[in-house]
Amino acid sequence: MSRRATLLRHANARTPRYTSYPTAPHFHEGVDGAVMERWLGALDPARPVSLYVHVPYCRSLCWYCGCNTRATTRAEPVAAYLERLLKELELTAARLPGRMAISHFAMGGGTPAILSPDQISRLMDAVRARFDLLPGAELSIEIDPRHFTRADAVGLARNGFTRASTGVQSFDPAVQAAINRIQPWELAAIAFDRLREAGVGAINIDLLYGLPRQSAASARASAEAAADLAPDRLAVFGYAHVPHMMAHQRLIRDEELPDARSRLDQADAMEDALLAAGYQAIGIDHYALPGDSMARALKARTLKRNFQGYTTDPSDVLIGLGASAISALPHGYVQAHSDVRAWGQAVEAGRLPARRGVAVSAQDRLRRAIIEQLMTYLDVDPAALAAAHGLAEPEADLSELEAAGIVRRDGARIIVPRAYRPLARLAAAAFDGYLPASAARHSVSV
Ligand code: SF4
Image (tube, rainbow, N blue to C red; front, side):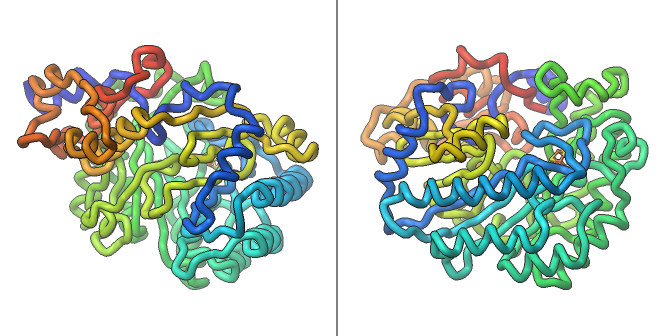
């Protein structure tokens, strides 16, 4: 069977993206604020942590959006949210075993850059009052080029931000109209100029394929136009159309969505354009310039996978703040209330706003390590990892994937050839001890 036929055959396989293991459908309400408090208290104060802050507000809603966010043109909700974020920061820091160092700080959303420069300064002053930001720590934030001034860029630089990322998705005006995100190339170019002039030198761009009215030619042109902006990294995702879960996606017309063949052509066209522009493929869906820290971490095998996708952050502790934010702690995962009101009420009452989560067992840790290596490096030696964890190698039936060429073996190593990297999720799923119960709730592979 040709590569194309194999990819198409498995394109609709619903597998997790494995930004955690166990995956989010296995989170439950038994993990609450009291559990999180115990887990935070048991952290090793000598080891740096990663901090993530979620801001669920945008100026307008893009119809494809799958994030926990809402549109507002008013300043009050954002200002009220910041006050509660500062309170949550205090509540969380007070439960840590001591003053801790931060190796990586990220703000996502939503559009966290919706906070004014003064508001960002307040937040960062509070972070610095409670934590030690390590020299060389990466500070990143998502921005919206449609609402990004020179003062915003200067404010980010003043607060130590080193990286900005933005969802471009497509530069095709017809596609932009169909997803309610009118953002000409020139607008993105101006935003990036402002960032670079201010000193925020590292830039990420997200692109999507599978959008309404998108074709392979349109996808290729968008990837080429994005590469012309010289970002250090790009991520290319397939649009996940789940209108039953995201009501605003109903505004996207089903008949304008490309079929599986076209989606595959678009993904291939974008990859061709980015490789031709000098980017290196990373993991299942990322690209980086060879000198970027992500490309270097891939080579050194220090790259990791977490809720933000791939990360160069060496810490294995991620503390999330804000509505819906997920913390990844050595004992397990905890997610805050997604509902901003419920999250705010918990914080106002002086409680950690934990809504659900899951404890991680020794067996989970081993399977997570195997899955993470497959998703990041497209190869893994499960026996070596099992020995390192002091456990037996988990059983995994890869025979069908091997027969299809999606997986091959080299001694004890399991390898996903790069041509099949969109299907690495299938190989990872073979090591997922929970999958049968949750298979229907994940997005398609291509
Ligand atoms: S700006 Fe980003 S987070 Fe906000 S609605 Fe658009 S895609 Fe979603």
